[in-house]
Length: 401
Image (cartoon, rainbow, N blue to C red; front, side, top):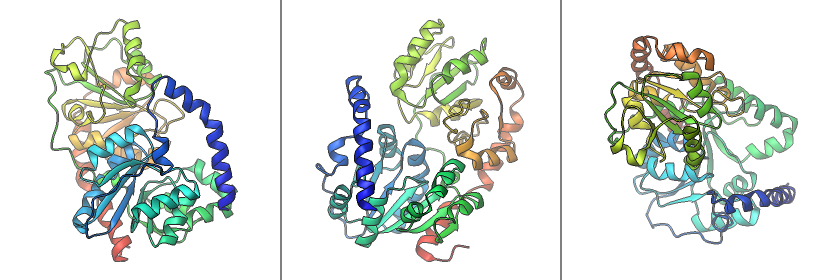
């Protein structure tokens, strides 16, 4: 199985090489190849406690890891932490959301010789995978080294479940080295149960997030703005067209800041004035405030009357974290394509803290009275949570029901 996987991974990288080369020519960020191949691994500070490895694929998972990371630091005060991500934006977010770790690196490529070097170098005692991202060589190598592998806040989409069901032998091989799977809810647990018996329902770590206590200052708005957050191409244009003409100030925060030149071209083409976040001291109320840096959504949510979450008006993304605006008392609207966030959709709609709608419905909806939605956010935040405590109990105390 290992030889087959190494071969498939090598062929995949060969097919991917031209794309990576073009991205480099265009100046796009992508994970450091030498580090991912274990040729340049940094030393870690020496502490008497265990080494705990937390892996978060990208921005959303890094934010979701925050409550678990804080709890682990309390439970293991002498531990060293290794944080890995797969994307450049995820690594930047991890440095903000998960401060004080011994190292922040890109996840290793899953060749057997690469992961063996990683494991010998770092010698982790526990691996915590946030929501997903299973790699067979890494998991089996860690398992054989004595490391305990934990999949936490786990979920499995219908599409992934269908694919894995077609290859049951490989799927069971993939899940076999996991010591614990802490599932978000009963639906995900039932899907995961086909591949592993070690499952406990502990909840969604995203629901344990707390509001940031350090917020950057924002300019003065004539009226509370609307934040368009985590947008993907071409959602910016779709949302601006759906909301136009609009006399409410807008904050626009694309999911990937490297797309800022593309968005600037769009705003110029539409003759829409804008001010970049880094130049926000020059803001006037006739402009869009364009967020060109990661990690600035919290102050925007706190100030806004409404958040509209992107990644939900296109059919191929599946939505983003619609719970986060509610932490700041801000109602949230989102589109019809939220397949990857079904549980959050259920909580938001059940508590009345937001609304799922289509683009044509947006313009009238944003002018409606948002007071009931805003009041519901407080109830939502107050009643949900506890996933972190249940996760740690399932893993370390073995008494989580």
